[in-house]
Length: 237
Length: 236
Image 1 (cartoon, chains in turn purple, red):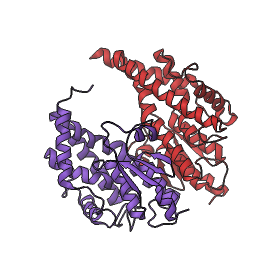
Image 2 (tube, one colour):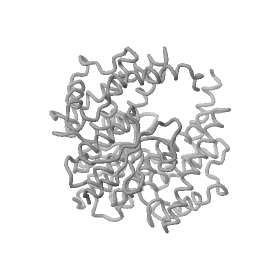
Image 3 (cartoon, chains in turn orange, green):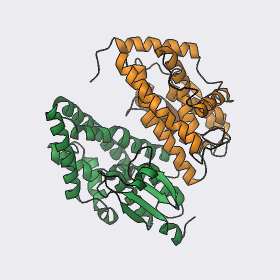
Image 4 (cartoon, one colour):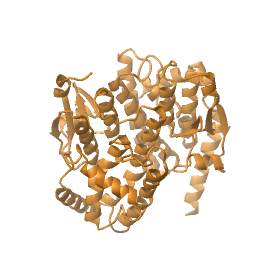
């Protein structure tokens, strides 16, 4: 069920520096869905955000025909299922392939992202430990690209085109690259992770993605500034 | 694509007291799918488990026609999509309703479960903080159920149990055990009437009753984990 009228009613509440918002922007761009972008500064959180996402009070929130949808990968699935006759198809059709896609997206969210976040917020030794954990988790994805029959020999995790897992990981990419610069660390080592490195370059150059990727210089600035703020906070338990 | 032969090739690897294995058993039972249950051991994980789920080394693992599916709610979606012509639908058909169902299932996994385990595996101030977080999380679920019941739904998504109900329901026996072992009340009938009414309703479904793990065994396990934690703390 998709018409131009549908799209007029699509709003995305988000921020330019958020990798989670970026995931949704990529999905919308790939599907060619026009939407109104509402910049949310998060400080203070707007009335619209608090009303649309009272449980988590976080971005992104997609508002479609007045109904809010929260959580980035849930929004991506919603976009794929609502605009289900519009290519590209972000989720595979086969139930097993879908399970594999969901598994790796969950791995990215549950294992990889917390480490990356710890690199972002941590200082000194804590940051170093987080870097080591991140570096330990990325090879698991490299291994999946190398050996999983669903991904083997394909351009993307999603096959010929960008799919669910690519968006889950790719949304974080610009942030990871900027984080490497800001913390002077190597999280994705091209020599040790050749498939992932090739995937990264291909993803960043893809139509639909390159247009929405944030300005890398501004992102490094943002990360550095935020890390300074974290450093001045009392230590968390 | 479903025939009796499909069902014969379904295996579920796990242990019965696991809340996550319980979720999958409920889904399989709701769909009437026959399967072989392969009992594994949390303290001595089998080669089959380690080979089938090398990334997480956790249960449940569903093996269907030799294909391996991991992560409980991913397995539940897989079951619903593979046996898609077998009632009931576990995940709603409408994209918006699906997003809501997924939202609450993710809430249970990402917010509720960690706060509850936090009550078990902490003491003093940290435990108190985990108790407060758990209460806040249960209140949010109570409110969601209140909104559902305003729409005439007895369960999260509808008039029958579905995706979000399975996500929470699988944890019920474990939560009750944690309450007992830590002497806390996390699911408070006075503050959370809709949640507690849902718990009663869910637990009374015949099919569910037959699957929920033995509370005695779960209590034993939860007590063991608590004792292990407190003695580790005492040792430090």
